[in-house]
Length: 460
Image (cartoon, rainbow, N blue to C red; front, side, top):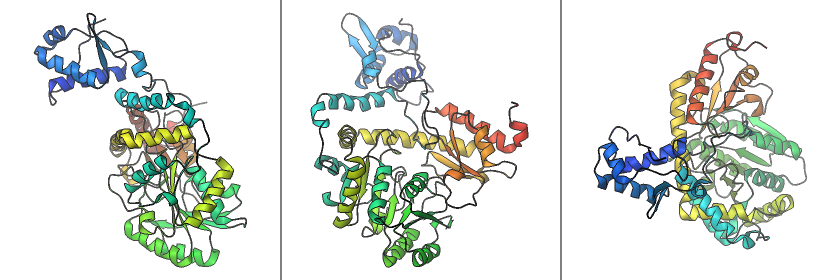
């Protein structure tokens, strides 16, 4: 079949670029298929009313992007299925939509680039099927140092560890800090659910402290240090989960000064810190002497990439941390750590991060357009939003109502550290949901918010 004719848009781009992008877009939408034959260049030039050179340049650009291939004596074809085997499927698998996930890029070229790294690792499987040195190879650590440097975190090889995900890192850090005694960990009133589960498993008291629009209140932290003698303060200070708030630099300095004075380590969970182009300096750069910094790749590259970079404040802390991680996890998977390292080194991680940033911004535009602004707390760089519900709705009823929307909607109960909780929900805008699905789901949510539960509910 060679009767494909591309739509070249409004003429704002060079025609040859528009041809390449039309091929890429039609591949993503399924209007073109792997191995499909394309029109001959002269034929397409006649159909589009363009000169032959422009079409030839367009095909050349598409070939440079890995989208098409030319066969002598046969013609031009969409690159074969093997070249597109890493492209995302249109079919959405059953997954855990309660988790906060970045939006999944649809760019076939990007997915092919991501997958080619897997191919290269597969050519030398022997080395990644062995036990590795704990904390990552020197190459892994160098990649981690470069990645952390983007957040202003400067660290040497002796204080950085590559571990199997942020949750494993938090479990090991709190184990190392709390020792064998039943202790206290401080957090904000609404906090990451994982820290609640860890505190429960280790039989620690998790104490939620009040916040304002800038985050943790310094006076509340100071008072808790004096009364409770905590083992650590847990914070998710940039694009916090669930509220999306970012703690400003001056508040970070206040909190760091109190922590230093009280001798309380800060656990800085920074999975979203790399997403904003500009944001407050990390605690690990403001107060490296009291901060344990945990930078996960799961929120900025992909949840299945179970790799996190951990910076400890001193060598002794590193010894205790290493022992705790070894006991629970032995080591990070060499396959995933090698994948992460190569993506960082060759710029693939930047390409993926850029795609996630761009798509998150577009989805936040939909939030601003569709949901009532007075009820929403969010950030242009985030891929989730915190929504306060009007009095006629309970959080449980709203979560139930949104269950079939295609978005992950989670009630405040999951994040609360106290009995009194707001009637609010976190809406995840990412994961496998496409932008049209997000738009429809937000319109569904906006309609529900404007009506009563009785008027929007289905009869059973």
